[in-house]
Structure formats: C-alpha cells, structure tokens
Length: 238
Image (cartoon, rainbow, N blue to C red; front, side, top):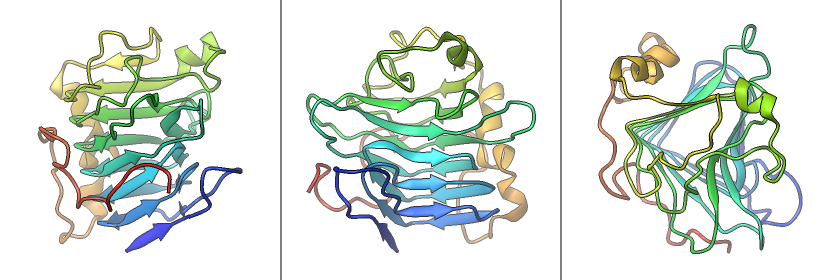
C-alpha cells in the first residue's frame, strides 16, 4: 500500500500519513512526500519494513514509535536548504512518554552537496534513538542540528534525549557529532536493549504474530538495500 503526498517542495506542511491510532502497525508500506511526510501524532506505533521518503522533518510527532527495518530515504530539498529526518515532539520528560526508535533501518541516500541530519528538537525534550542502522554518507558528520541551524539554544541541547548505538555506514562515525549534553553515544548492549520493539513499545504484547521482527538487538544492515523492499527509482525531487 502507498500513502503519497505529491505537493512538491514549495509551500508548507504536506502530510502523506497522519496517525494517532494507539497500537497501530504499518507493515510494508510506502509513505512518500517532501516536508513533514509522516505525522506520528500519538500512541504506540510500529512501522515495519516500510519505505519513508521526504526532506524536512519528514518523520515527526509525539508518538512512541519504532521504525524497524525501514528504508528512510531523503529527497533533494530546495536550493540551499538541508534535510532533517526526525522532529520528535516530546514536550515534557516527566508526564509525556514518547519518542522515536529507528532500529535496523537505513537512513540516507547519496545526494551530492545536500546536508542531512538525523534529527532536530521539535520540542525541548525531543527523544530519538538510532540503533543498529546503516547510515549513509549523506548524513552530516555532526549528526544532529538545532531547530534553527544557526541558533543553538543551550538549554534545549541539555534536555533532549538523543541516542546512537551500533550503527554502521559512512554516516555512522560519531567522532564529530554535536557536543550536546543530551546526545548519548551508547557502548553497552544492555543499555541499548531498551530501544528494541518489545522493550520500547511492548510490541510482544500487542503486535500480531504474523508480523515478523527482531525481538532483541539484531544486526545492522551491512550495505545499502539491506532492509525493506526497494524504493521506486530515484531519490531526487520529481
């Protein structure tokens, strides 16, 4: 199944799929757009072996969601603009239990001269983890970016919770990542295990048995194309 918004690069938000359905599964679907493609609004959500494409903040919202073995592909943005994969919107660390986990996925697409970032804080307590994923060369070495690229708010860099663990690929090198108190480069598998589908969204308690996924920490894709059915040809703006 496909959910597509063909509004193009110009203009404002153009959502292809909006979900506030608790305990929902999106399995082997294509969700295609440009800005703000997928609005994971609220509730427990599980995206499995799906293709998601976009430019700016194209996976956003306040859901508690896992993206498992998905291909997350950036498209060419407007001139002199950059891409951002996630804009997670947790607004309170004590009363709001939400976040995005990108697990065994493939974020990227090699677009020459286009900066892409793993995420930026849609709200001050934004919560995102990239675990055992293949991260392409298109991802900027700093990894993460402030809401306004040229205006870093120190308080927000302390309250976000961003995690990376076990990722592979040319964009996975964490040596030059942003120096934020809220960014955690994990080394311990036991700590990273909290981001598995069963631990993060209790997937084993409600996901139908016919949906196959790794219950523990699986291995990252070793090369591009190792996850999800292939996208249609091309990653640039049409």
